[in-house]
Length: 380
Image 1 (tube, rainbow, N blue to C red):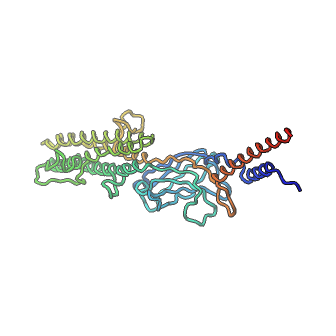
Image 2 (image 1 turned 180 degrees about the vertical axis):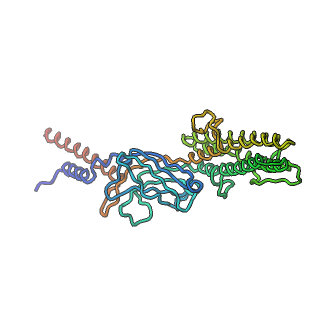
Image 3 (image 1 turned 135 degrees about the horizontal axis):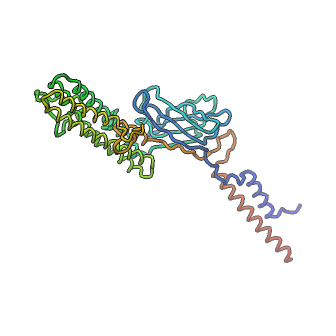
């Protein structure tokens, strides 16, 4: 039996390699179709609910389902957001509220959507991740300062405290407006002013002259909490490429500025009212304090379009708080599709690519040798 030419062996080997690792393995597997966002809101308590909205999502294959997850900064805690249903039009509208009342901004910084078997005996997420989103760490630090962690270790944030102090000041201003004596009115307006100013404020003190400084607030004051809205800008600076954080940081700044200016106006009217001797005149001025504190807390529909917008002259402390939550919006994007592991040998994309290159190289080498042999035979 004559020996098999070397070129024939090379070509045969190359064809075998290409059959085992087809050229299609050189192409990218693509990503899971669909995109959207997830954002946190208040439901039963602060920041305890997350809503996922997506479009263009492929229906899961038979025997599988999508499941959402919130993942902690250190990735040690993974909380299921339950099974996510996809409409026939590829639309997802899924809401989850923590049954334990967890603050989802305080505890987590990542969202995953995985592909799970049905039924699924494993309570942990699978390795097949279809979509993911994460808030940049530096930005999340300051978002938490605004909402849930200021000062560090606290369960409340800057804007949470701003709302609470405005609610306290407004309650005292309402009591002043309803007072029947000048002494009672002065007492409640002193409390309102001290809540607005804080202990270091220029107008803080025994404003009704009864020998006692009364302050039912936290001592920091509305104006200081409003000034600390600057952490929205810090968050935006920490993630300069994130347009969502930039947009809502601007909204926090504008709405927080409104809250501060209205609180200043409320304080000024209260200081004038305290000096009145006639209770009716004082109550009219106290009404102005109530109106300005109401706007500072809730915002004001200045243009009458039925919506309090996060712009100068409209948004208040509640608006600033809501847009701080929107700064923590997750952009959900598809991840590269990977083949699930099987019981047998499953080549990885890298292995396939290397094998494909090897196969092509062998084909070229075999063809070159074959040409040389043909030329040599013709020359003879």
